[in-house]
Length: 248
Length: 255
Image 1 (cartoon, chains in turn cyan, green):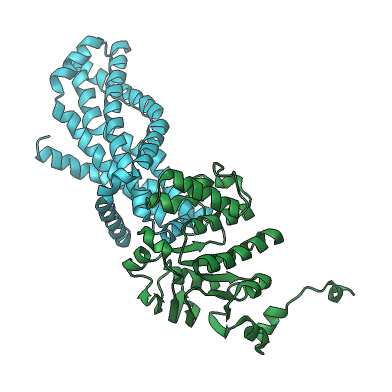
Image 2 (cartoon, chains in turn orange, purple; image 1 turned 60 degrees about the vertical axis):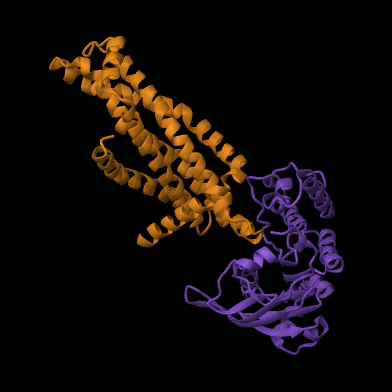
């Protein structure tokens, strides 16, 4: 495990060193951005709409019983901004995009395509890892902001239509505006940037470590997704503490 | 990566005391080889004798447990060797990048290192593909090619680099006899045109004896013989003779 962590840190450092060469890889970055957006946008919309709806559905009646139903907008808003959107989107992207990264790079490793790159003096970090890491680091925060907005909408729809909550659309967003500050959205934005780096590096590392045939690729994909999710959850705790400490 | 390197002659390769083990099993037992600049050196031997592992060490894809590989006197693992010299390898499986078209694969080295304008790269790609009989297939995906066509595209990719050292891992396997002859001729042309150093790993005795300036026989990770093809052919070692004279005679199967 410690060897894996060390290798991940080294790969991250090498990718950071390659960052000045990102412009040369811009075509691959755009390809990856398209891949991530195209593969995830619909899922992000559906997932976020229902997450927002569920939060409203669970907490709305409890607040209503205590005469606090007007606070539902703020509750759904804060939950989506600070926790649910960044974490759930990171989990979704780890499963949808991290797995694809690990499978593609793993397959390239198994079928000697990475060896072929090395014989041509093409650095696999520049060619494979850098565009993926840059693309996911750009795409995930955008998807998270999108998810926050859709989640609010889901919460508002449920709050309006559910007779046990019965908070009108306008009241929902009025309370949300009162309670949510730009810093709260920024909070989710920072978390999503960190999670994007974790997914990108863990998935690429796992792909590069692939050995064996198709079974090895399958193993790498599973490890990439599981390790990413575990690290996301652990990192979420420490980031939350840090952001609370910084009063963000 | 300088474009000027293309005008240089082939490089010399020296292997000294090369040992390699995988999971406790020794694959190479202290290999010593010298390949002169511009020479075509063929390494023959049965399957599992360590030929491909040796080739991977020579190109720097594997690190030796002991010993060293020197290209023009510099260790292959040093950062400067790949900057100074163009080294190419034709993998047994082709190892084309499936995410790119055939044309992009062939021009990958030139485009990634920005050695030529795109129009010039396109011209070189067409020329090299025509050379291996794949003209007009630039926009095809590697997955649409047969095994033999992939191998030829991989050879075109190596040729597009205009290398100073080119390593072939079973270049004629999966090819029909006509294409095998074309590839053998191209190995010889490269030597004549550019004085490229070629190291060829092959089971193909016809290829080996037609192109080799010198050859080595390897068995269970040890070099059994090194020398001119005629000398290796005359070598009295029973393992060498068995390998070189093996033939399938259906008559022997008859009851």
